[in-house]
Image (cartoon, rainbow, N blue to C red; front, side, top):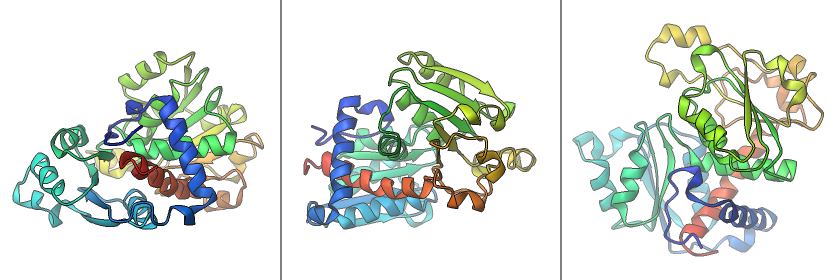
Length: 307
């Protein structure tokens, strides 16, 4: 169903296609050994023009656990981009060797350029402050497994909502499910971009509330999605220093939250979630990280037509 397709932004796949993908991820979680040779003989290219731990490692682990192999680079300086090669030419070359590629790049729209040039399936591993669709797949799979549904949820998104591509992608994806309610928790300087409001307004009964204090909405939430204030997105170091500790989730705040609320975070965290919260059963961010590998395994199989 998804064979040969690209994944550039969350809405590239229909809700039904996502359900099928999540069902496959669930089967892999239940019996990973059954899929250990599913991609034998296939090659994944990982083209990471900016730093990554979870996204790169989870893609590489996903392909290796499926019996495939990986080639790639983990910095622009270690690729021909350092010599001035264009993304389009890099992808045309990589397509001569690999069966599919994942690209992370600091410039918005770069993944689309790559997909239009490659001739093999291309996955967006994050383009600037724009989109991060495989993190969104990770988030949606985790929400579905932990809450049992993807509709009629009250979701608090906290921290850097301006530059946080994971937030933009998640809102866009969740907005097409029925009766979603978003609580946007951020300082004035880090509010979501205008196009994100439009995504919510186009949703199926979706609505949003903007607040500046996490404590004001914690008792009402099904999900709290924490994000870090991203130093690499700031042009002014003083602004980063002033805002970086705006919101810190600790045990005291967790006492305000419902017993069945879950806490998610795309990671890495800096200090926006206190270490003491890790032992709270509602803290699901490391479960979320593991789910990222499984959903990427399912995605690789689907794009290669190996389900």
